[in-house]
Image 1 (cartoon, helix red, strand yellow):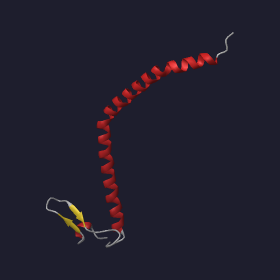
Image 2: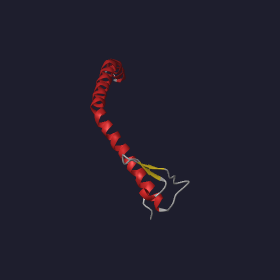
Image 3: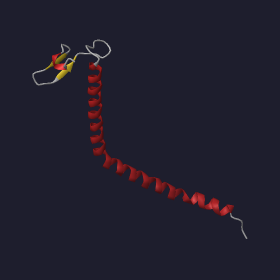
Image 4: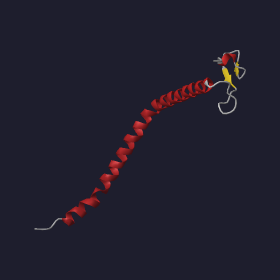
Amino acid sequence: MIQCKDCELCKITPAGVRTFMCDPFLNIKEPECIQKWQLIRLDMLLATYRQMQGWQQKVAPLQDKIFKYMEREMGEIDESDKWKTDDDEQEDEPIL
C-alpha cells in the first residue's frame, strides 16, 4: 500500500499542510485510497460538527432568553383574550 506522503498526488507544504490532488472518482492509485478518503471526510465532518456544537453552546443562553420572553408574551396574550372565552362558557351553562 502506497503512503500518501510518497504519492505524487499528495503535496506537502513546508508548514506541514497536506494537499491531496487525488479525486476518488477520477485518479485513484489503489483501492485503499478510497478508504483513506472516507477517513479524511469523516474527520472533516467531525471537526465541522464540533464547531457547530461550540457555536450552539455560545448561542444557547440567548435562545433561552428568547424562549422565556416568547412564553411570557404568549401568556399575556392568552390572559388578555381570556375575557372572550369566559362569556362563552357562561352562555353555554343552563340557568336553573
